[in-house]
Amino acid sequence: MIFNPTAKGNKARHFRRHLNEIAAGCALKPTRQAGEAAHLAREAVEEGFDTIVAAGGDGTVNEVLNGLATAPDGLARARLGVLPLGTVNVFALEHGIPFKLQSAFETIRRGAARTVDLPWVELPSGGRTKRLCFAQMAGAGLDARAVERVDWTTKKRVGRLAYALAFLQALNERRPLVECRWGGERFSGEWVLLGNGRFYAGPYAFFPKAVPSDGLLDVCVYPRLDWWTLMRFALGAVVGRVYAPPDMRYFQCEQLELHSVQRVPLELDGEAAGELPAIVRVEKQRLRVIAAWSAAGSQEPASSMGPGRSG
View 1 (cartoon, rainbow, N blue to C red):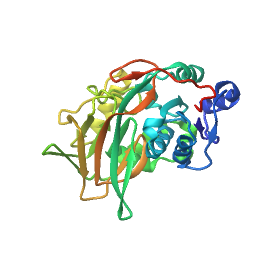
View 2 (cartoon, helix red, strand yellow):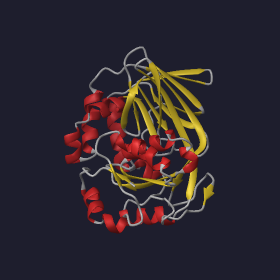
View 3 (cartoon, rainbow, N blue to C red):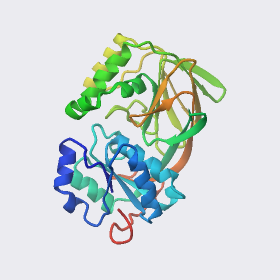
């Protein structure tokens, strides 16, 4: 179980108070700095653990997933569990993982693993190609710029409101066009969202056709964004509906290229990942996730959380 001991918030404090009770039978691996969760996950696979638990939010899940996925045969040797301690926890929501810690841990102890797709992104980095995967969602343009602008001190104090403030700031900036290329087609927009499930930014089904095990990316391309569109998004969130502008393009594909002639950042699971250009591919049904309910995709029985190197 990989956990940030400096994490703030009621969930993290509750986790620490009940750590011995919740994590009995697990090896706890605390992080000491940003990015260390990936290293700890790789290390855990090499040590023989067959269940790697990310105790945190979507960013922690992303780090742990990248560590698991880059370990030798990591995806075959280990499966991913989640204790949702973060601000939004979209991945946990997608897979029916309870937000109450005791219930979530019981899901890990007793639940079966479902096999889901794993999207990979290739990005330029220092003259080389960087390869990263994501669990639930990615974005090029507006939301990635908002992630860059988030004040982390404010985030610790006001939670998801910090993202809303950064989003408003990013909306005031000039937004370069992102060109999407897939299957011989091209379409451009100021904001591109990628989904490996239905939900984005909370319980909002931006990708209503998404099935996490179908081998397809779900893509939303927004040609133009303005304050009126943002207000429609906000009103839709209040009434529980996702606003789809008339000019929005929604499609599914196995591979996608993203390009821009100007600087455009990319986020993966709510974390800054780099800049375009990028190539996104999907490995079908590659990741085993301990989920609370059954859905499309193959299932396997739960393994023991006892002395058999789970944790």
